[in-house]
Image (tube, rainbow over all chains, first blue to last red):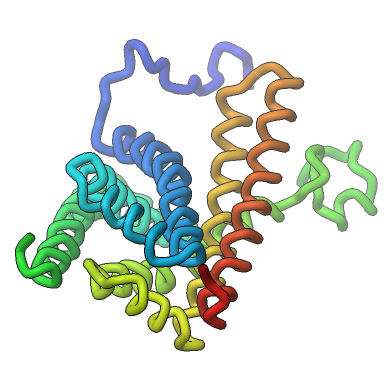
Length: 131
Length: 130
């Protein structure tokens, strides 16, 4: 193959965004966000070890507007990364490579991540008695 | 067939120029598969613990199944997370020195946080708290 005929990677500044490329970069972005979210998991465990006072402080933060906003974002990021991760695993298994399936699974992942986030939060609010 | 310059031994080992072979790729998938049920269980558990006080959450951890699954979740999460961050760093950080330093920080931090979390989970499960 001559140098002139080699395939080129998409040049981001002039390449039209499409569902597939946006979902791909979102998978990476949610992955990074979830690593940040893992610190919340560590804080939760540390607060539990330190006792009721530390745990109350943790719960106070989670119940705050900023805490809920972050937790809501992380819930969606988790469901998105989970659903799109399964999409990636099925590609690894050789399934769904054609354009039509790629778009169908992409829209499905997006919808599933939103629906699952709303379901989890609705149940959470029911647990809290609507507070 | 690959280049004839490759020795038969090198071909059998299949480790390529990075000397790592498919290890990184495989562990990323292995932890991903493990995290599918673990994450669903974790979200279910967190939703059902919404608003629970300290004593109730400690009781939840005291159940062996919950403590063990939490430990597995921590291991799979931090392993998967550091593998992913490594790829991000390799893609975007082009200075060899900064890249190596960043990967070391990520790997050490992941092991430290995972070890600390597991120790914490064990303490909560056994009621060694406060």
